[in-house]
Length: 395
Image (cartoon, rainbow, N blue to C red; front, side, top):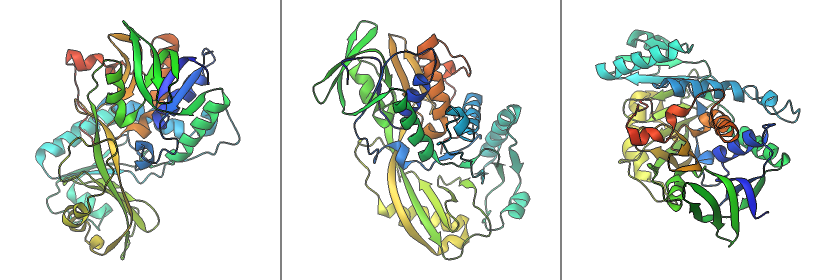
């Protein structure tokens, strides 16, 4: 390890490794990159606790475009990693997302979002209850008045493979990964000058990237900056059913707040918030077992009666890096610190947005602007000037 790097990245999980790879792969970048990761097992990272899905059904057009690039990138992974024959090609398991509406207001929101999606080439279908019953006869549709469904570039993908190859390729291009924790950040006016690590090392840097996931606000505070991102707990169960469904289960977003999808040939993944949705401690990953018994399972069995008899295979709790303002990404520099870069606040969308965010932050560092997809609408400035467009499709 050196005592000076052109770019220091705090956080080596999906977003930090995306930044490391895209930056190191650019021909116009000749500098040194250090990734500081507090836990290289990533056991409690949002990356490892993700449900690993991608969708195009967003209400904000920029989020649609971000996921369109993500879908293209991951399905052409070998080509995007330099035609490296070691890199496997992966595909999206396109069981799709299905949003169910039980009110006129929510049905109208789905129609508005579908208009945004269709304008960008996403073939979202709007279904009435009769069409839903024909496509998915296993649902209890009491109270459901409409739905939206898309099966193009929507479903499960192997994020672990992409993550592994970004780290491997970044190291091969000279990126240094270390296990340590940043304990302080030094500023000189409008610039960050370095970081101090828990090991006692002092590292000078030309630019700093905050890719610390749910701990992003803690990192920003070290630089004297406020970041409206906090850890919110999300619960996941993988279940088997005594009576499996006759077809793949799309990722169904139920009006009750739970969601469910196909996970294996005869297993299903169920997700939910808690009874309430407070900020939690960074290290709080305890399961609330009453949540399943008293809340999630009754709702699940009501919507899909065949899930009355199920068995929990595994379960876990993870964290969203939740942007409390508008649930959209925060990317780019701070108005007061021109070399402190945010990659924060993805509110559950981080894995699917990581290709576009990695590419975008590399463009910004190397050229001072976005060269491909303009992500400036998700810059920090909007939080101060009030130009907020909240993402409505947040699970």
